[in-house]
Image (cartoon, rainbow, N blue to C red; front, side, top):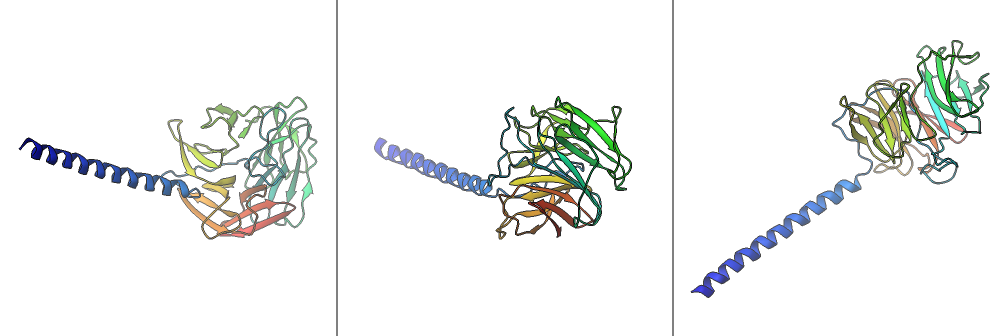
Length: 291
């Protein structure tokens, strides 16, 4: 009799053990599937707008930021378009290596160097929608940020000590949002938006700042971010069915994108141009992608 009850108890324990193992296996499968969806856009969080820096990238085949002597990532390019024809772009440079700013009014067919004399890197481009006004944050010879503004589309510049500094990542990896340092969601921030709650790019993950000051992920596999009306322009390293880079716009947590032939390991800067367009500056060429 006792043996019979013991067998039944052992049988129940064995059945419960099998069920527990099965549940764990199902959970593992779900977690692996979520991890593989590296290019997904998280739809729960609307994105703010803003001027932004692209993901730091070297001219090599690596998509990871390359450290400078100071240990900070090297940002190679910035792009800020305000229409289907007008844009600013900059080779950022680095401390001790002055950058360069150029303008176009013909959708990138020609670029005109600005008259701005630089002593250090370009940190941020902040354009006004009228195409004539705007300011850039540049570093002086001591690598301290200063503001230069223009009212003539970049033909003439003046120091603007009373102008609020823009949004950028300093050489020491500090995130500046509208001229104020903020707590970043990671130790190595690579890009930041300018307005709304703010968006920071960390190791390929774009994270939006909440009203409480916290951070939530909004997109993965991101290699560059740029300004867009009511959202953010993005370049993604991978997307299902696309062998090249995917570029698009994220608004209210939804991604509108297009596949391109841009190699996924290319240094790139992106910005929204006219409505439904993403400008992508790659190599010596500017591609205007219709979504």
